[in-house]
Amino acid sequence: MDSFDVVVIGGGPGGYIAAIRAAQLGLKTACIDEWKGADGRPALGGTCTNVGCIPSKALLQSSENFELAGHGFAEHGIKVKGLELDLRQMLSRKDKVVKASNDGVLYLFKKNKVAFFHGRGSFGKSPSEVTAGGETLNAKNIIVATGSSARALPGAPFDEKLILSNAGALAMLDVPKRLGIIGAGVIGLEMGSVWRRLGAQVTILEALPAFLGAADEALAKEAAKVFAKQGLQIELGVKIAKVESKKTVKVQYAAADSSSRSAEFDKLIVSIGRVPNTEGLNAAGVGLKLDERGFIAVDGDCRTSLPNVWAIGDVVRGPMLAHKAEEEGVAVAERIAGQKPHVDFNLVPWVIYTTPEIAWVGKTEQQVKAEGTDYRTGTFPFMANARARALGDTTGFVKFISRKDTDEILGVHIVGPYAGELIAEAAVAMAFRASSEDIGMICHAHPSLSEAMKDAALAVDKRALNI
Ligand code: FAD
Ligand code: NAI
Image (cartoon, rainbow, N blue to C red):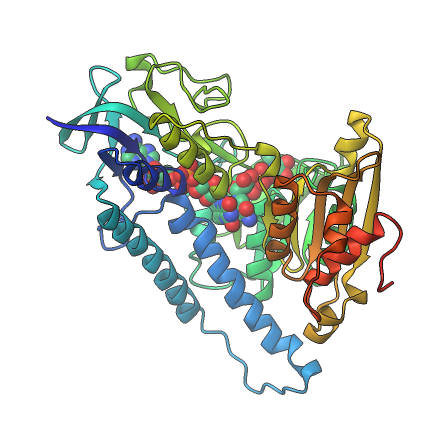
């Protein structure tokens, strides 16, 4: 029986990063992952690489290019004649981007001497034994990083032909004329944007009465306004009653005013959240505790109920984000090696890659208000930023929230061009507990979108320079 210091079950961003960090620290490490590519070969990188972050961003970029060529270039004096969509090519490019990322992880495993086992991993007779495909491994430490899967609507299982999970939503061979989406969360908005840009008429049905409830209200309001203008139809406060699929999908639901409605779609994406992957792990057999929602129960340091068994990423509490999984993976590997790392969950940034992009880090104004903290805000619109005007994308704004007494930044919220890149400055500043005045005193290149960060920070003290 092979013995390892660390065996990681799951090769997504949580698991593969944990394995690499453990190996860097001199620990004898193995990673087990069962994902297979279309060719049946290992496809490391998990949900994120295969049917999540990476392919969705590839299609978001391609579909944005298509929309710009059709509707955005004319303003720049570029005339496009005979514009055509080659969806097969777009999907094949996406598959290549995915494959390059799969191979990248395999390369990193070889480089760092992480032993890779392709197959299902499961606890064996004891919590220090793991079966990997046909083999049994002995492990001093086990990190469970098995991720999550799409949640189905009751009575409407995914068939990936008419009722699609994220996997089907990223692989439609034709643009549906009428696309229905249940759930106006992150996947609903990103996938809805892709297929709307490619020509689908998109209707999103959302259970909650408020749009993007987790975001700062000002951001959610601005985004809702722009999405409506783009033609994304979003209905809030609905209750899905029945989903029937034959050649099309018929959805019956109660609208916010309680009236009964029905809608017919050519395809339906269901994006109502995700469930943790714990099946087949033999968790019950070894006494690994799950919480009331089916996630592996962990403490703040990702320790499970069993000694030397850790769990990270989507299979545990907290936001289901690749970079959160990675941070936990690094921290657990370092804890196993005897170090004392720290993950600040308040500084995990969110980015929604729609147009406009939506990004934030830290607290929303509603949260700060509810906590009773005295605060000031500063907002700066991209309309007043020279680089945004040159880009031809002046939608949205940057909003800073700072403590009234010390000026420490509590949250930064951006809706607009490259919000997902700009947010990094805010995360760095907050990690160093900077004040908004600090950002206002730093030289930002001109003309750049980052100047909107500086101006919003100055606006906290009512001294923005460009408005
Ligand atoms: P996963 O990535 O789910 O990886 C788990 C791996 O473990 C998989 O390969 C699985 O096959 C394997 N596995 C499971 N059980 C076993 C077993 N018993 N034995 C062996 N292997 C097993 N997050 C972002 O931060 N940014 C984004 O832009 C983003 N976009 C997304 C878009 C979509 C459409 C989706 C669905 C998700 C997106 N996410 C995004 C979320 C992100 O994908 C997840 O948070 C992230 O993948 C979680 O990483 P993980 O390592 O915990 O699990
Ligand atoms: P989500 O939690 O973001 O959104 C689900 C939405 O569905 C919510 O608004 C919820 O109120 C709604 N909903 C739930 N049940 C419903 C029902 N029965 N009828 C109608 N609406 C219902 O989950 P989503 O979009 O499935 O994505 C899963 C996770 O993947 C996200 O939470 C996020 O963590 C991650 N992700 C991250 C991305 C990014 O970082 N850019 C991109 C895509 C996904």
